Each structure stands twice: as C-alpha cells, then as structure tokens.
Image (cartoon, rainbow, N blue to C red; front, side, top):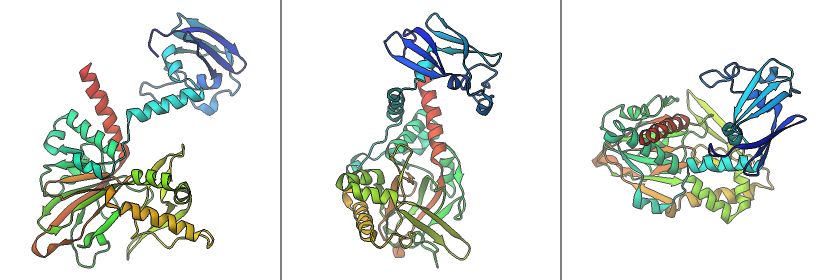
Length: 387
C-alpha cells in the first residue's frame, strides 16, 4: 500500500475492529491481536522487542472507543486498562489477516529471496566470486552471498592457500560451527581414517553429517594443494532432483518425505545418531531439506509390506543423484574455495591418485542463518546507498 491509500472508515464489532479501505478491501483485526501488537513505547522497546507478556492481556479485551484520524491512523482506547494504542494505516495494511493477504506476503518474501533450481547446464555459468573483492566490498560480498542463497552453492577464487583461511571466509558473514571434527578439518589421505573423506577414494554426492541434530547447514572447502591426478569436485542440486522425482512419482516422494530413517556416525569416542526423513518438509509442506548419505544411513526400519516400495523410491532417488545430467563438476585448484548449503546441495568427488601429487583441502562448517542475516543487512545497506 502507498501512503496515498487511506482508510475509508472503521467499525467496532464484537471482538474485532473492522477496517474498510478506500480500494474497497475490508480487513478484520481481533482486539486481542491489536493490543498484543500495540506499537507504543510501553509495549515495544526501542530495540523492537516486546515488553508486554501476551498471557497477561485480557482475552476478552475490547475497544472502549476508537477513532480514525485523517484516514491514516487509528487510535484505540481499551476498555479494561488505562492504555491507548495508535496504529498507522500502513501497519494495518501490511498486517491484513485474510488468507489471501497472508499468501501474498509469503509470495513476496519468496520473491525477495529467490531459489533457482539447476542441473548440469549451470556448468556454463558457475556462481563465482573473488576473495579480494568480497573482503573489501559490501556490494561484492552481497552478490556472492546472494548466489549462495539462490543456488545453494558458490565458488570463491583467489583465497590465499594458507591454513585457516577458510575460517576467515566464514568470518565475513557468520561464525564457524565446531563439531567432533574440530573447528577446522583437513581433507587428505590419512592412515586409519575414521571417515572415507580422508582417503583417495571417490565419494558419491552426499550431504554431510545427517546423523547430527541440528545438521550444520553450510560447509566450506578450501583447496590448499591440487597436484594429484583426479579428485574433481561434484555438486548436485538436491531440490532439483527432488522436484523431478516428485513429478516422476508422487508416491515415491511421499515415501521419502514421511518414512523415518536413521543416520549414525560411530567410532571409539563418538556415537552420533539422528532419525529423520530423507526429504524434509517445512510447515507449508514445501521441501526444505535433503538428508542423503549412503555411508552413514543405517538398516531401514520399514515394515515388510512397505519395504519393497521404499527401496524402489530410495534407489530411484540415488540413481538420479548419480546421474551426470545433474552434475556440476570442476577441478579445484589451490586458492579455490566452494561453499554449499548442506541441506540442499550434495557434494562429492572423483577418486584421485596421490602417488605423484597432493590433494589437500581444509574445511569447516557454518550456519545458514548467519549468512542470510548478513545478506539481509548488506542488501539494506546497498539499497540505502543507491537512494
């Protein structure tokens, strides 16, 4: 709504204030809702946090009287307490409670933070940034983080091939997430590895740490040495695969999004376990996570009648993940880094021969909420500079 779109009239009804807009729309607001969201300094701190406890508001609160001022403000005196609330027409319009208005705001939010599904065609235009640029330019950092949000992964070039630099990249937008692997971990061939990642074997595309709750939502890998033959990196958009799986077989999608499976990491010192679905759904029923790691998934606990159908769905998903039509592939050179949304984009690598060279990556985990927070702040800053 623009500031020029005023309120035509307000009507007090039992339990609700009804607002008639000049554009013909009618909105209904429960009095309890309005009192709970009163913008006065006695209700809202200057930092934006509530001072009032919702449980303390009289559930039957009503307006003693209300007043429309110039079509742009609504003043309410409450009947059970000595308090006055003043709402702007803008706030009331932005918080309309019809199903259509709520759905419209959700669509606007999704458009503001778009998610773009991809397959192998993204090989033609990898989302790439430059460390030198993003470390000094808010605009460059904003663009790189926006690519991570949109595609679920991005590459960063020219990160100095020095130990610990991967954590310096994290510090540009958030904080390192420490796990049993430490704050940082080295990805190279080791003796008696506790994880196949620390061998020269190929790794099929997977998400990391599905046995952990909460799962680290971001993973970063920084290449320090890359003289070994092979070891190409592979990333796969899990959300794209799931969308195609759902179109192919809604029943397979249903099985994988409703059947619990268990993931586990176990060694002499740790036993980390989580039971959840392979496809995660949010409160709206939309896909918000994929948990896929064939190395750590345990024997399925599915009843005998449904086991064949579940295996058919699991194998179909696995075959699609392993289909090169979904692969984005690249050879990491020293100073290259890539970041993945670990609940969306699966990563893997081809086998490599380290007998005549080295492949040494250093990795860490971080959390997506820190990245998205930094992105929102940067967008606000960049936009304000353009105004």
